[in-house]
Amino acid sequence: MITRGDVLQVEGTRIVDADGPLLLRGFGLGGWMNMENFITGYPGTESQHRRAMRRAMGDAAYEAFFERFLEVFFTDEDAAFLADLGLNSLRIPFNYRHFEDDDAPFVVKEEGFRLLDRVVEACAEHGIYTILDLHAVPGAQNQHWHSDNPTQWAHFWTHPHFQDRVVHLWEAIAEHYRHNHWVAGYNPLNEPADAHGEAIGPFYRRLETAIRAVDPDHILFLDGNRYSTQFDQLGDPLPNTVYTAHDYALPGFVDGGPYPGVSRGEYVDRARIEETFLARTAYMRETGTPIWVGEFGPVYTGDPLRDEQRYRLLEDQLAIFSEHDASWALWTYKDIGLQGVVSADPGSDYLRRIRPVLEKKARLGVDSWGSTDTGIRHLIEPIEALFAEEFPQFAPFPWGAPRWIAGHMRHVMLAEAMVDDFAELFSGISEDEATRLADAFRFDRCVVREPLARILTTATSASFPV
Image (cartoon, rainbow, N blue to C red; front, top):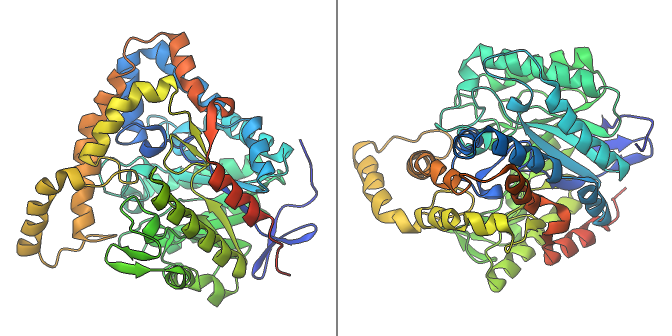
């Protein structure tokens, strides 16, 4: 492993290494140790997906598939590719279930460290820092599928037991990595969504104290509330801490309009993109702390004209980040074709096998990130009208009634019903076939989104403002 002398530190508004200030520029490794439906194709949540796959495949084929998937999804070849793009960091999301079982709380599993260590070391060999991101916690820290939450209720904030388990897990992680200089720091909760805003500040302070008692040196990367867009409930900044905003732009969503142009009823151009960024990062400038955009990035449609506009959107965001000395982690590195710079080949056996369910998910609008509700508006509109008439003041956290209704219908009810549709596509396969299907995610079997790669190479070649 490449070695270096000092753990990264926060100095005022900058992150610094032994040679001075640096910007962290990289990707998030979504879909690996924390699986997400649009990234690898299944409906619902990771836990639902895994239970259904085990039922359909049997234990032996199930274990063969997921062992191979976790092995090949990110390897030395992937790390070398990131370095070739000029990137210097990788945010690694993981699900707590790799480290702890619900029927054995507080018992840390070494298997989780074996997986993380391999990618941390591969990145270090290519001069890439890693940020460790707990993306799904016991009880779920937010209302959505990406925290492995099938219900739209974030129970983490109201159950001290769940909070105790997360503190204990981070103490173990900090102990394991406290001397690793290629770990840039710890991102303890992805996109927290404390509906009342009363628990997140005290919990962060408790967690900081616990981690610092074990590892006083590594940077903490703390997400704001309301999916890392709100910071007024966090209080004064903690020492050696970076606060991270997530900055998805309206024209980059699956239902986004032209860029520049109107998305969700709002005209968005470069000036509006910068205005949104400045609003979401105001806390950092007010407190004199570094800016790190922990997630952002458009999804791509396959339509050349629309995708060209989305590349332009991305270029504008990257330029804005550079102008404001912001580090960033683009979402997401590898998938089945929606966002990644690297994707499974559309002609792979894996994608050919799951295509019927992908088409059904698109028709019913099941994936929040990858589809719209066009095909089921006739079902959703009467319920929206009912709520508008009977419950006009109902505005559930975090985004109000229409998105709450869509969440229940599309991403809870329909998604859960469709989980077995996906799993049945793998019923009866052998262990060898399961391994071959997982190999669709090997770097040498994947395709590169060349326009995105070129944009990133250009962005990372820009010099750091001194």
